[in-house]
Image (cartoon, rainbow, N blue to C red):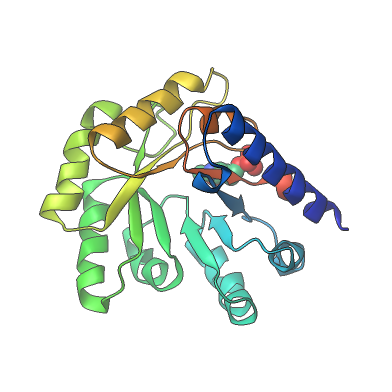
Length: 221
Ligand SMILES: *Cc1c(COP(=O)(O)O)cnc(C)c1O
């Protein structure tokens, strides 16, 4: 067994354990394998091991490697987890099944316009900057409810959830709670939170999707 396949099995096991400890069904947590910076030869063994849901943070990079992989493996579900520029919206809608990073009105409008033009309607999440970090994308938590209403009611986006990335050096749990609260009070079912370092805690606090990269693929160069 290759190292990435062993890692994948270990992550799946840890997800099931965290879910069980939280009194949740393991099937209520989806693993988004974050394959950014890794090329097809690294990703193929993970696909062969049955993983179908993947996360990428750059449209151009995903466009270069995923169409061929989607031809080879049926049932791939691709999530965009990085910032989206308005001039890449057309490519993003053509490639991704879920856009997790709707983070500003201008982008929400551009996505809605392109959905109308193309008829493609990937599910969307709003990204919330729970730590209010200047270098990080996402709406301010105080603006999240308004932004949900704007995306849903004004732009008619197929909004399904929230996504967030807690500050690197702080306890992530208050940030996970904040995201789960925003989802609950807005009737959004998908909660994308938790990465290699903290996904068990995210599962305990209600994550429906964990985005795990380095724990599967190894450190990124
Ligand atoms: C890279 C990335 C991840 C995965 O991070 P790891 O620590 O490698 O698991 C998750 N979410 C987002 C938004 C990312 O950019």
